[in-house]
Image (cartoon, rainbow, N blue to C red):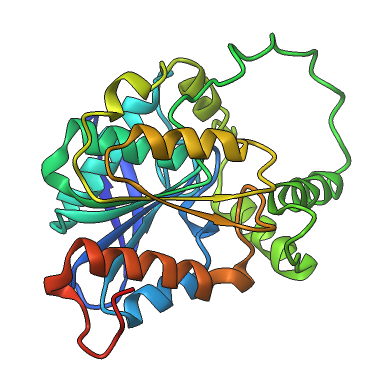
Length: 282
């Protein structure tokens, strides 16, 4: 089911839900510049079938959500995540964040702890700018022919998935088309990169987290190295860690069953009263 939820500044955020709203909620927070549909449909359905009410949504400046009037930092995106949670009436939620979405999840747990039951942090870090400030903008190249942006986008996903994980060209090509069809000109998703640049490291804050946390990282991540994932794990008290051999920055849809099992096993340990008695909690 789809909804439009107002953020604090009135901007509307698109959200989609899967499963029974009476089940414990799982809020999926996607990474920078990407809309919520980048979360594979199969993952959403598997989590719902496991007994969770799954929410994925479009960040501001992506997909069917509104465009912000000004620049912002990741705290604004965390406030948006809180607005989605309270607007749907599903808090507290288990929060799963991918890449920059994992940083948003950390901020949500720090600023609105009453809305977060547990955290799963995928391919992320505690410092949005581990290599220092971004380089100055380069001259804008001439416009590409209409067919080339899609080809370049698929190639970009290929890099993020990594060389050791399966890559379904048709799936990612279709996703690129779906993402393009949902957006509207001008494309303002680059504001997320500015938001990351404007957000200081979270290392000094996340030591205060007391929510059950699972950090999941691939050993072939080209964006945030495995060492950054391990540092995040060490900084959060009692966090658990899982390295996935061969995974790059984003998992391929074929691995949705694996990612679903990692998430649901963690959630059952975090909230055993909600565990399915027919499923193992390990």
